[in-house]
Image (cartoon, rainbow over all chains, first blue to last red; front, top):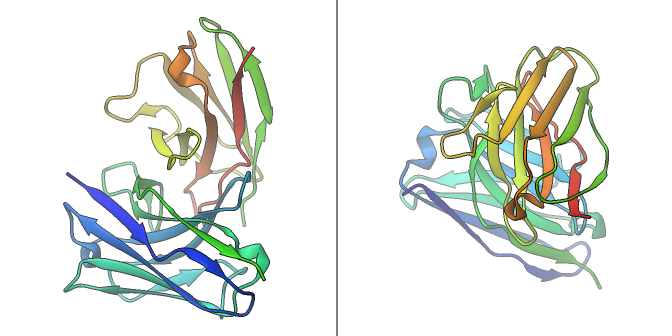
Length: 125
Length: 107
């Protein structure tokens, strides 16, 4: 079964750092394009970052320069290192695989399936 | 970036109703549009790809249509399990932005 399980969320003070993890099962993280998507409390979905199966990485403007995405093939795990955290970073963070079936992608842009259950990050003093 | 706008933001309906949610792109995205369903406390679940193709296992009461800039998600006969928030997402180009969501409430 294809599954994603996030961890690492919690309460952190503004300016602090946190690292989220996303463990995958049923497929290989390094062979797939992987994303982080966040959702502020009561709000909509915001794409945060993508790491392609090669080496290309993109970030949303709102997190560029502060967040770093990486993966560990030996652990089949995706990470999101979040630095210089702000109150507006408060959200549930989901990891999601880019779609891998025909019709699920247009070049490097894809829908997201599956998603993890999410991990809550709260930035507050 | 391509902006996605959904309407309405909230929709009140009853079991058995036929409902339609609209999603509009700020420029043409051909049919590169997905729809998701999200229930409280849960991750989004992917329902439809390429505007009108149902993901395996999605009930046939769900349907999608549209191309270019205007798209719709229709539920032909609402079931109790369908009350949730629905999001569209364009994947014509990076970044694949989402609409702001439509909350489907029980009337």
